[in-house]
Image (cartoon, rainbow, N blue to C red; front, side, top):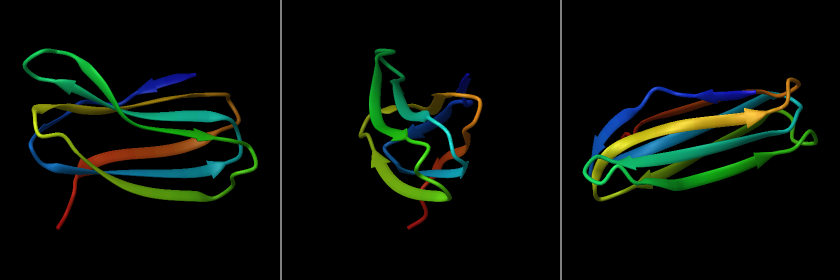
Length: 91
């Protein structure tokens, strides 16, 4: 299973990544940043979820000084139920 989110355009703003694991399974969640000028993709955050991790809730903040697009990619088995969201961070 592979899921990719829509891209969120950000110009030197902080973003919040929220991840909720509702059902046990193996999954990987990646927060990626695509530079708007060079089109290079940078891994900003990676979280590996294991079946032993149940009802997990994680929040993290990230900032890249360049303009570009943040997006989430999730891969894993069919037993994992993961919700991930990236949005502009509130201060």
